[in-house]
Length: 236
Image 1 (cartoon, rainbow, N blue to C red):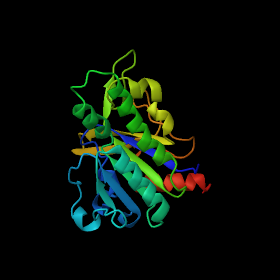
Image 2 (cartoon, rainbow, N blue to C red):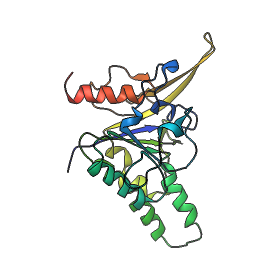
Image 3 (cartoon, rainbow, N blue to C red):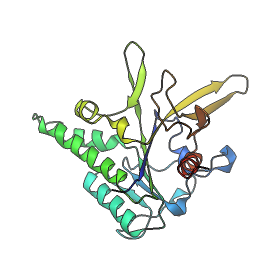
Image 4 (spheres, rainbow, N blue to C red):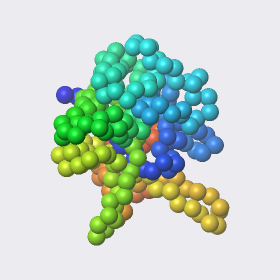
């Protein structure tokens, strides 16, 4: 097994997850180099980036850096192919990961048996396990929606379906880095601030190795995140 890095970016719709992918000088976002990035779009919605169709070309089984699919087998095979045959690719992005589970649930909604929950969990794990076992120079970024968890101390979690994935798998344990989005409004500047939370702060159950990030809150910039990971692993 190689030591591929699994990185999660979790948050509600419109909280800056997708924006963090793309180089955007106007927002001071480094982003991920499109020439080194392969995006798997599970929901199939257009990417929120001007001119993205000119940068990300459809994957034809060999060439291309963009795939739309909600099928766990197709996604897993594409990731493995990239790892084995595309040395130019350093980043794989799973966009809207939670739809991998919810779309399958809708397809099987009329089934009354419990096996459907096992199948959904199996397909979820198949994709994440492939992401954990890719080439050591590939980072797999998993972008997913969050949901609130009520309790003595309200917190947040990766949005899933049913109890099988949450209770039997414990998804956060699979990630080297698990970031949560935080959006705040600055009244004096009349400006919205988009950030990633790098470790627990009482509300967001984020995690990262000690010393990887200098701040608890960082810009929502996966390029910056990638650099911090590289610096940490290479002791810079």
